[in-house]
Each structure stands twice: as C-alpha cells, then as structure tokens.
Length: 270
Ligand SMILES: NC(=O)c1ccc[n+]([C@@H]2O[C@H](COP(=O)([O-])OP(=O)(O)OC[C@H]3O[C@@H](n4cnc5c(N)ncnc54)[C@H](O)[C@@H]3O)[C@@H](O)[C@H]2O)c1
Image 1: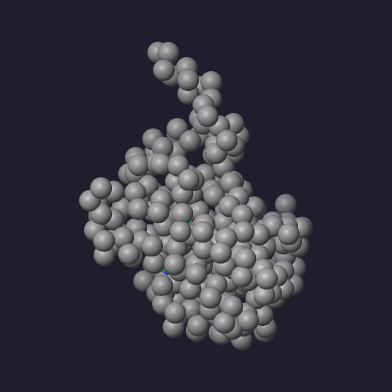
Image 2: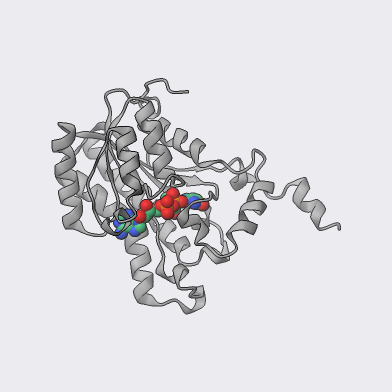
C-alpha cells in the first residue's frame, strides 16, 4: 500500500535485529514509502549479520552504536548527516533489554546493577539519542522521533518486571524532551504503545505465549501485528501527523480501553 508519503525524508532506524523485529518492518515500510535512512544497532547485535540483508534490501548504510554510549551516538548522528547529505527528518527508537528479565530475577528481588542497565538501555538511551540530535541540530523542523513502548508503563503486568519501570521513564522522556524540542525546533516526539508481538525481545518475557493469547481475546480488533505497527510509525514520520507530539499512542487493537470481553468472561462460567 505504499504511497510515497516519506519521499525526500531521511532518518535513522535503531533496533533491527532480525526479520521479526518491529524496526525491521519499519525499515522495509520506510523504504517502500520513499525514505532514505541509516540503520543502527548495538555492535554486539551486528555479529549475527542479519542486518546486512536489510541494508542491502533497503539501500541503507549501517553505523554500529551502543545506544547507551554518548560517544557512539555523537558519531552516529554526525556520520548519518554526512551519509544522508544533511539533516534528518525521523528517528525510530526500537530498543529494549532487561538483564533482570533475562536472568529470571523477580521484581521483588531485583539486582540493582541490572536495574540500572535496564533503565539505561531501554529508556535513558532515548534521552541520549535525542540530546545528541539536539546538540548537533540534526533534525529538520517538523521532524519526528518515535519510540516503542508497552502498556505495562500504566498497568501492572507482573512478568514484564523492571521493563515496566523503564517504559514509564521512556514515555516521560518523550513528553519532557518533546516539550523542549518542540519549542526550540518544532520537532515532535511520541511513543507508540504496541500490542504484544512475537520478536526476540518479546519472547524473552516469561509466560509470553499465554499472554499473547489473552491479549488477543481482550482486544476487539485482535493484537496489532508488527507490520501494522510499522505502518503507524510511518504515519507518524509523515507530514500527515505534524501536530501530534508528546503523546503515548496506543496501537493495540483496543486492548487499553477494554475492561473485559464476552469471550474472556465466558471462560469464568465454565
Ligand atoms: N515485542 C513486543 O511484544 C513489544 C510490545 C511493545 C513494545 N515493544 C518494544 O518494541 C521495541 C523493539 O523490540 P522488538 O520487539 O522489535 O524486539 P527486538 O529484540 O527485535 O529489538 C530490540 C532491539 O534492541 C536492541 N538493543 C539492545 N540493547 C541495545 C543497545 N545497548 N544499543 C542499541 N540497541 C540495543 C537489540 O539489538 C534489538 O535490535 C522495544 O522497545 C520493545 O520493548 C515490543
């Protein structure tokens, strides 16, 4: 359904690990819509080599960057502007990782070193990325930054663990920096709160399969697939959403506003 709505736009896409990644789908869609972009991921994620296939397919260059490193981000922003021939119009932040989740630490017994890493990788990295863009005046007026989040920022989903705290911080950073960047350069910053989606990061959450089925039954439209999430991100990068900023936007088939569905309630009559 490509309509060239990103024709002439340039950007940076973080977080494409493999073809299940939401960022991978955003990159494919952005390419189909006429955008040019740089792909980036943590140097360690590059070892898998998958990203090269995406780069080839979309004509993008790859610049490795650990999104927690201010030095790497400085390099990423300056090099991207060189490669793309000027300022950029959009940034996708599609990054999440919790060592506490990975190591099976319960929320009541977190390892605080891991906790700091969760917040740094999954939330502060947005601040560092946007701050690097701000410092280098890297984003054109009406440009758009989108970060991916999850409803555990507002409501308790026990197995989401310390990632819930990271997502709350991420959403707050998007509002706070959205204010400052909006005032200074009319740059927009939003978070998209996506349905559970089968990806490497998603599958790391305990009980993910049961949860994805529950969520499917609790959403009038069903869980939103990764491809549809990509379409939504593309609309937020486009000029059709120029006055949308500092928002947490649910892309979840109606889950966030559903108390219960008939299908779920009937299970309790059994
Ligand atoms: N999958 C879901 O169910 C779901 C639901 C809502 C929101 N999200 C969010 O979507 C985003 C993308 O996740 P995904 O589901 O596509 O999984 P994914 O595993 O494909 O993507 C996560 C990415 O984060 C990158 N990353 C980790 N540490 C990094 C670092 N230090 N520097 C740079 N990059 C780093 C990984 O290399 C990977 O590419 C995450 O923010 C995730 O929390 C996912």
